Length: 213
Image (cartoon, rainbow, N blue to C red; front, side, top):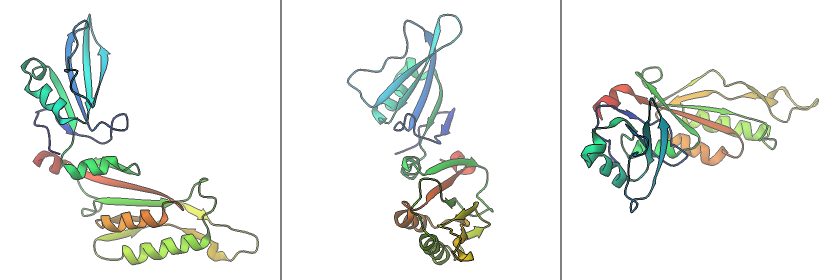
């Protein structure tokens, strides 16, 4: 995976239609003669956007580098490329493929040093999540994210866990928001508790890194 070299390139923050990592906007063309991609190539989707007069702009969504190379090597198509949204590298692609992760463009990391933010909470889907599950999750978080590469800050909403009229006060348990650079720890937590909680991960792509890429 490598970054596409184009002056109007920007980093992708999602997979288009759940699978395409690159979107190339091309045009405008006469509506009867839109962008053409050879039929022997696969792994792409073209969406037409009708603009002024009898013109059409195409957005080519793709995960096939042969399609990207074809567009950028074709003189006619390249001169009509308006913008390219795509990948920085393989890690960027891995982040996008994670359905529980959101990519955020920012000038700085959280608190100036943390690349990832992990929020943990219980929803209506987790009816079987118990107080013991919450206590184990808190213990894991405390042991895994207690070093200098992490910070726990506040709580992401208060949660009840199997609270009954006879349950102890400890059944009222809340989850901290974790800011961290410990990506391995986040994935270990997901592996252990993904069935018990909703685990939301946000990862920052710094604008300075985009410029360097």
